[in-house]
Length: 549
Image (cartoon, rainbow, N blue to C red; front, side, top):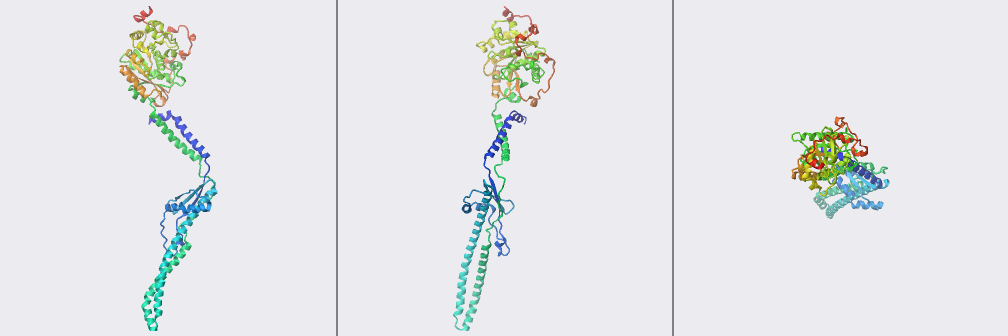
């Protein structure tokens, strides 16, 4: 859940922007759509008393359901009757009202009066159609009953004729007595049929077809569509769902390292430091040392925490040479090294920062020192370490060995025996030597130099380094048996919320000197004797003596 909250926090503007755009689009489209009005009429599916007045008090059983009647309402005969009356028969909608014998007919049109008239005409045509069907059924039944009455008349007439043929009264009485029961039965049956026929005639005059208009449609002043507010709200909800889905999809496809857990999972190494993003550092091409410009800031305190972590690593085995590298360029390794060097020096240690990035040297820019002579010149024996080492103004105990002249073959130079001799010579003048090395993936310089160091620290940039890059960089370093000790998670945007970050400004003793980065102070502004802060060097022997010659 915490990870998902981080995702929502990191991409909050996307989640906010997409719903706003969809809501605005929904409202805009709604305002462009022509207004539509609705005419609504209610129809009752229930026989009137007159429909069954001669049915011995029992109502005729209703066999048509509301859905069936709605299909009849939309049938071709009804539409044809409406078209004949209005000259048009647009589609309508109808739906039953639950738990009642009513259904509602709805017609839509651009004019409110036309919409109401259309709904009423459909209902009128439907009722007339149903009444015509009912009358036709009654007429058919009447014809069927009349077909029964006619033979009965013929039989009764035949029996009456037999009685009339008798010549004598006695014979007439005898014949009449013989045919009377049969004739009476026929007369009685004929009377029943005639009574039913009369009932059908009355039903035909009173029938309504099983439907009647209850509530006629009236013109409405309010259109049923479009509804900008409702559409905007729906657009907002749909946009929110789209935004969340888009963000989660991008998050799954994004391979960048976004959290400390990602860095640890990709590298298999512990995270020794969490460095927040520096708000003042607008351009990555500018050299900026926050530990010098704002030593009491939470970010400077983060570097002091990294210093403590590294100090614990060197409890059992002395840590004299620390290599700092990264998977790719721009991950912040040089800034991490510069701030760590300041933090170590202000803790009372003698620190030498060495620019071993012989492809794109930047250490001299962070500390505002000269890059004309440096590490490569010392390795080649062109200059002694005394002349190559430069002090940092305002930070006693911190020396910088710039990269110097760029060689044509940096990898071979860093893997040479002469490099090892220079590093050993630096150990005589410092408690710890920090090496700024090129990134691992583009070139093999860091891998080649890893054989000469006591520990290797990998800087991972939040949101920039990918898990694949971190994994591959660690893989290459392990193949060379590099002494990997951990990672530094750099550029974290939300340390205060998720990593128990640095929410206070400390007034520690080692943050009291130097509030301005030397990179922003010109050489003319540096006071004389800045080099006096350099720690006293031991007597030079070996490589240093030969270099002095």
